Amino acid sequence: MPGPSSKPVFAFRHVPFEDLGLIRAPLEERGISIEYPDLYRPGAPAPDVTHAVGAQLIAKALGSKVYRNPVKEIGWFEIHLTEAAARDALFAGIGPLETVFHWHGETFDLPPGAECLAYSDACRNQAFRAAAGVYGLQFHLEVTPAMIEDWCAQDANSGDIDPRQNAARLAVLSSIVFGRWCDLL
Image (cartoon, rainbow, N blue to C red):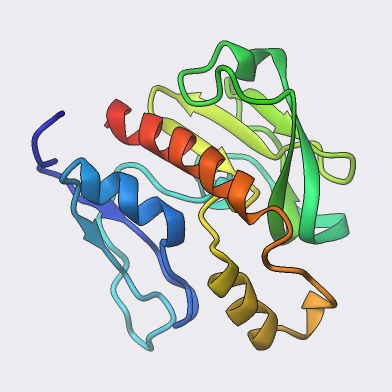
């Protein structure tokens, strides 16, 4: 097991109720520290980071366009993992079809040089690898049923979502993917 990381993972919070959910355990198990820049606070300083988190943020930082998706994806939807995902350090052995949780109305163009790892019927870029250790995930592997319930209470867009519908499989996928990502750090 690797020793504690000298650099923290930044978890940007845009609203007070955001949390790391299922990402926390793999980080803590590997001694990786977590910092929460609370971007929703007035006058909050932006952290000095060399690698961003979040698919849309990473895509934009790498020069790609972020824009409204023709369809909002809020709830449980299938993703298709690509052939590149089958060879990827995080996604090998997963898929080719998985049901994951989505909560987005925007999408992005794939950054130059990035490799598409997953897509859905409603959104062509669901996951990508831009460089070693730099991944963008549009879907939410980190959510727990409690987080989904909280998000639904916070947002009128949620409709009737069963927070436990695919929670057990999502927890397995999250452990695999985020555990492998932590091992790359």
